[in-house]
Image (cartoon, rainbow, N blue to C red; front, side, top):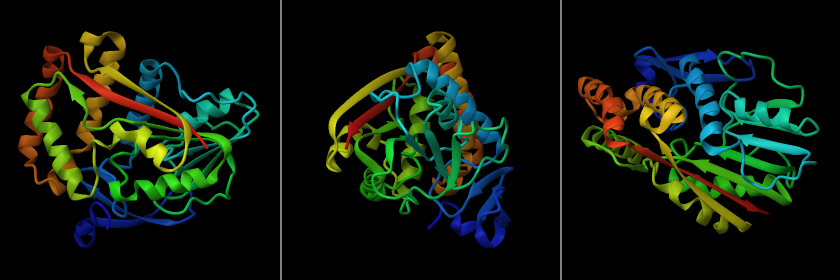
Length: 297
């Protein structure tokens, strides 16, 4: 059952997605566009796409690159699962011009922006369904920030599919962040608890990102490496910290419908708590845990 399926009769509109390949069920709630057929907490609209693009470049600065696995420079096929706006895949396609790069997601971005590289191809699909690729097809498969989109019970099947489409000797890399924050104040703690409660009602475990290495081991990967980053949230952490705080605040804004409709939070309480967060991050020197794990098939 989708995130906002209980609103379909009154709120949803069935419209054709911009690739014209399929018709997708969406709900427009408080001015934000949501997919109602998947348990994804954030909107799927142009405003969210702008945030994701901003986030992509912010994470590149904070994490020191677009990937961490030891990828062979002669890599031939790369898959980005849950590609979103495709910015990660576009950059990778430019970095590996000899490779064919595929980005898989529910739908293409609402605003296409710049023309993607010629060696990039969008593929419509749902990560929770069988992937539309043959066995042993990709040299590198990348998946980032889907911990709030995949119920914990489905992670084993999702990873098994990713392993299936990866070539022997190929690498799989997962990059995730969830409810792991350090040095938080009362409002941030309240906000995180709201997220935990709403997510649990959809079967989503926001602490799962701490076990990425174990998940990769459970599907038979070897040479597993894990990395943990403490990302600064706020101008106290310099230019990058300020950028990340802006991204975080915009992401939290996008969670309003999820927190209120699924988690039962009052809209006024949500707004007041959200407004207090930036000042609290500065005072507490809040950090956000970001986890990366990769392994070889």
